[in-house]
Length: 404
Image (cartoon, rainbow, N blue to C red; front, side):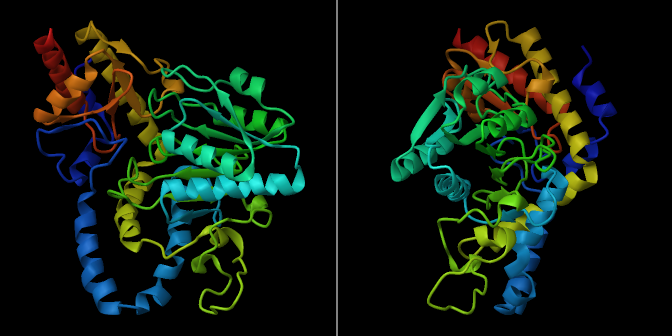
């Protein structure tokens, strides 16, 4: 096995690490798939924004740039990371709000056109918010949830999906990368299966956007939602994004009709008339500060290239598994070993991992914990070194040894 020093020396993306706040310290950060490190350039950009754009232009900023930022930055996000042509991606609201809007719009459209389709298909290990939103919409609209039982160390397979979709399926909701195991779903195949059954499909991209190449247009995806504070490093609570395929813009009625999605926001008339295109899926005033922070990371991803980012991600997670196999005999791997089926993180299982996580945090080694017994190691490709992986896993071995 090559050493971390050798891997870092041959890493073509190693220099990007210097562009992140805190990367020069000894702290080991294994939680980039929950909250990415800030890009160093973000601090200056936010300060400039406060002094110049906000402080200098004041309300004029809305006319000059801010009104269009949810869609112009959405176009950049789509082009750089999502494989989405312009005019289909918008930024604003939280992940939960986007999930609600797009799930509800989808099932309402199907109810109008094919009223016999009364089921939402979703898996038992889908991210909790997705499941909770689906449960709420099913209750509101008198629909049934059709559950796919999945192994928490894997994810939804093509065979499993084929077994549950059919003439009653309205919408299929899937995670591209499973939040617990990092299972990387076969998105084009699962999308085809849903479409062959006559259903719409919504993909949650929270654990893939910015780390795993996505080709929404090529895969013929209907709808997608994702956050920007993980691998897109937009900061705590930075706004989420929604993708709606252009072919569906005129068919879907979004359920949260706010003034920013109106065809003429400043008309302020008595009735709602949706804007054209993706803008109709915007609801309220967009969070501009969060978008300013996200722009710096998008520029880094574009400079590196999303395929190179993915290559580094695979190398990091593969190295983490090699080190774990060699140094953690009491630990089992709860993530796919095949890199083609693995996203940007690795989950290691041990019955005492909750306690291990707490002790690691005291040592400035920061993973996160997920039941049952999972130590989740999120390796953000542009800000994580191989040396960091080696040092962090050595700390895991030490803590486990102390607990014996």
